[in-house]
Structure formats: C-alpha cells, structure tokens
Length: 114
Picture 1: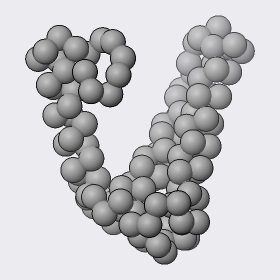
Picture 2: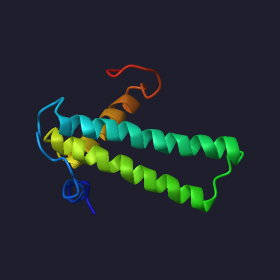
Picture 3: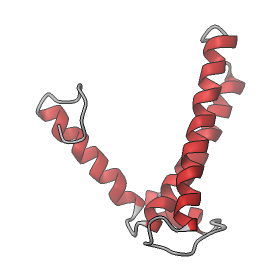
C-alpha cells in the first residue's frame, strides 16, 4: 500500500470530513486533538514499559505500540487531506529536509530551519 492509497482509505473512515482547507474548523481541530491524544497514548505505553517492565518490551506490548502508531498515522493522513496535500508529498518533503540537514551536518541541534 502506498501512502496515497492509505490516505484515501483513511479518509473513507473520517467521521468529520467537512471544512477541508479551513484551519480552526471543527473538523480540523478534531483531527489535531486526536493526533495529540493518540501520540500521548503511544508515549504513555512506552512510559509504562520503562516503569513497570524495566524497559523490557514483550511481544504483546510491541503489538500495542504498533496499533497506537497506526492511530497516529490515521490522524496524520486525514490532516494532510485537510491541508490538501497528498500524504506521499508530506513524506517526501520530510525525507528531503532530513537529507539536506544530514548533508550539511545539521541533523543534531534545534530549530525548524537548520
């Protein structure tokens, strides 16, 4: 499955698809808050592996993390659709940015435009 195929499949399950392109709409903010929530769920599961399992990940916990990553990906896909950009393009731009930073020795550090 390509990123664009995934994005189309994700959009087919979007319960609030309206207001595409309108930032701060109910549909857009629903996705932003969902992304933050799912990212938090992923982080919380990692925290519990560290705290409760002495940083030893069982296969069961690994599968739970994979499931949470899928939820994060869904929100990213529908947010990209909301911004009228193919998920494939989001992925390509990110890799291009990282490759440029790597070539310039700027992978470490902080700031968006390094």
